[in-house]
Length: 289
View (cartoon, rainbow, N blue to C red):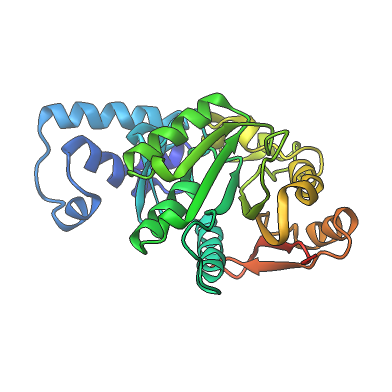
């Protein structure tokens, strides 16, 4: 643990416990509950190897090969950003919105599924979490979820996670710069966790972030380049009365409000907080026709 602390880990005890659990082949709770149990030589060698990797800054999620998010385990590697817990509030808000739309009025047989887009899906954590949650509520057949990403590698990882969680059948994966150039039918709900870190801040992030794709972190000079670009695409992609929800930085609320007012005049925009009460999700709605 001291080695990880000296290497700059922000959570050395947690990192050490997770890596020891991986080496021994048990859950972290077993490590905490039984610290006196001896570790075999093979597990000790594996643990030392993982500690050495972590000491270079490599994220624990990449070493373990997965990350927990919204109660699910997602495959993670250098193809995509590691899921962050603050993004779970975006999933909660989207689920509430989708459920409200599905239950607000009867949906006669033959009604087209409600179209949802997860823009910049990365590892697919948001899209897959939505699909799994809707399946548990027997609502998955009433939706069609599009997962888009500019990176083919990230999109492949998203497909792997969708297959792993058994929801690939209600999802479509599209390689695109934000949204497909031609939207065949508008979306009712759009969610996005796009890069929003200022370009000059990216090099100052914790060393673990240097292992993640810069494409998934760098939001341009002001941090809002891609958010602004998506705002500009919404009039042609979002159905009348539709909603777009975008994760933002904790210090970007006023800038995002101003950007929405400039790019989408007349569209209501509100900012929802995360569990730490920091501004986290911008919600914009297209007025009904």
